[in-house]
Amino acid sequence: MSPLSVFLSGAISLASLVVALFFLRFWRSTRDVFFLFFTLSFALEGASRAASVFLRVSDDNPMFYATRVIAYGLIIVAIWQKNRR
Image (tube, helix red, strand yellow):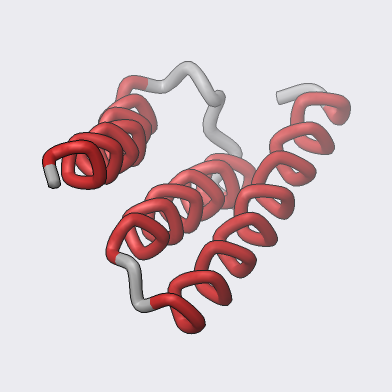
């Protein structure tokens, strides 16, 4: 991995974890499950990016695609549940 790729993956990881903390704060104040799903999704995305940096694995490794599918699936489930009511 190039130094720029490592830097950008670290920046995306940090941003994802910060967004997860914001959604966690919103969940704590409202207790709406929608925010909990978004918290889990962004935390999973941030952890995935951080793991790719620490393991020195490229972001296009199929192992990390599975975690992204799960993270985006959580967002889809959150939106579906919110609109179901």
